[in-house]
Length: 198
Image 1: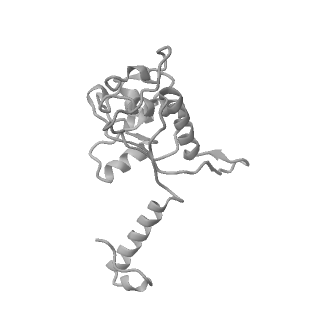
Image 2: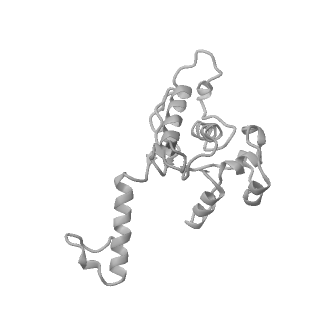
Image 3: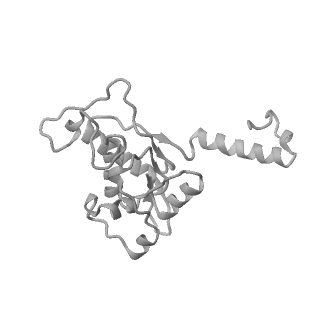
């Protein structure tokens, strides 16, 4: 499950993922999951029909700035609290995570319980357009998601952050440069570096 535009899900498919969906795919399946989204003719050109009540979502990737924070945070929180990544379900024994239950306690995480991977691709708090003041970016979206998840579950949000300035991004770029230099016969030109790890 990816947050972003049709470009994001199609890019994920090109990277080799077997299934990649975006929020519009989920809304097309069941409009009342977030009735504030009106799908357009353009949306329907790239929607991938699917029955999400029978689909196990394995991970969530926020690969682009959200265009609808309320919708996307709602879908993310629902999936994180779902049974086996299926929309419309709750983890067994976690019904108390529903914020509508009076006097609920933090659901906690039993030993051995794993979380669905949640990956953010860009930590930028703000970005600049031709508007004179900065706009909030994916980093702000992540912060909002963290606060809402904590308020509704009592738990800290577990996630993996990629993008600048995180070392994993620079390490990957260096590895790609080293591979390219090796491929064109110039791999030994970078001081202190051996060949790529291929």
